[in-house]
Length: 189
Image 1 (spheres, one colour):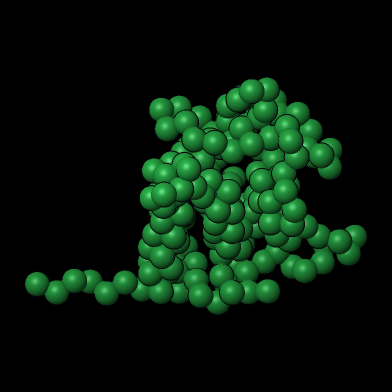
Image 2 (image 1 turned 45 degrees about the vertical axis):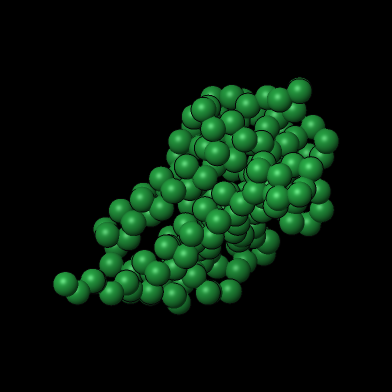
């Protein structure tokens, strides 16, 4: 029996899911004071956010253009937002229903919160004291409040990303160019 060979896109999607799962399932080593507890909530979130951005870039066929009508463009955010809109709309719907407060840069919405506060905030510094990420595996929601802090549920973020990959595959099935030019689009500037 011969197994079907993965194409470049399926291989990358598999790697993405394996990397997310590896970070998500990592635990502190034996001998650590928190041995047996998960240890990479921040890493899991950052990996998911990077892949959201990369797959949004594919959906935009390597775009959007570097400059908008005014010369300035939030390209990475537009890519990030595109994946959320097309493949993780449940995240946006839940965020909108919560009426999240403005971000530190006075932006609104779940896409802005995930991008500015959790993705950029951690990659380029450290999130403020009034936000957190945490685990709540029995809660099928992206957000919860813990000790007065808005908390991103890493468990649901990972589940939502995996559902998003399924949605992404559906979009690719409807547009053969996304599959045939996947590698070109995902590495586009």
